[in-house]
Amino acid sequence: MTEFQDIRIVELNDAASGLSNEGPLTSMVLRLSADAPDPWSATFNEAWQSHRGMMKRKATATRASITSLCMPYELQGQILELSKVVAETNTSYRSMLSQAASQSYGGGCETRTKRPEKLADLRVILVLSRGRLCP
View 1 (cartoon, rainbow, N blue to C red):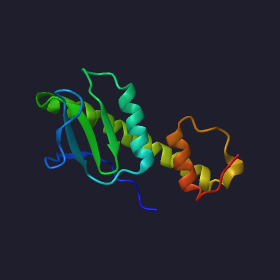
View 2: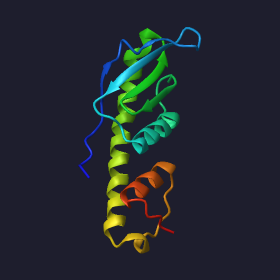
View 3: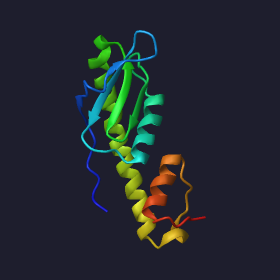
View 4: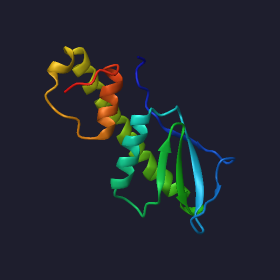
């Protein structure tokens, strides 16, 4: 398994962005620096839902992009807030990988003492344990 590289927002995908079905809001598609693993996206989506900051709009991460629904003039502020959550997600995801790897390399299922708190944690543990389910 290769080492996880931090994901970041790199640019606006003009071709994929456009009007949304939610009133005057625009669907802004932001390209990520790499394809985000599914657990990373799930962690980002959970973190964005609970993020406190400026008036935040709906945003969802999927694979190589984050789609944000906002007014065009709000985009720069949205990107600043989204970037904060992306950085937090990188830290959280790296920690989950480290924890899952230490559990996996530490002797397998019998060394596990704590249950995963989030669905994303469970996905990472399942992937790193190569499909072996631990009690």
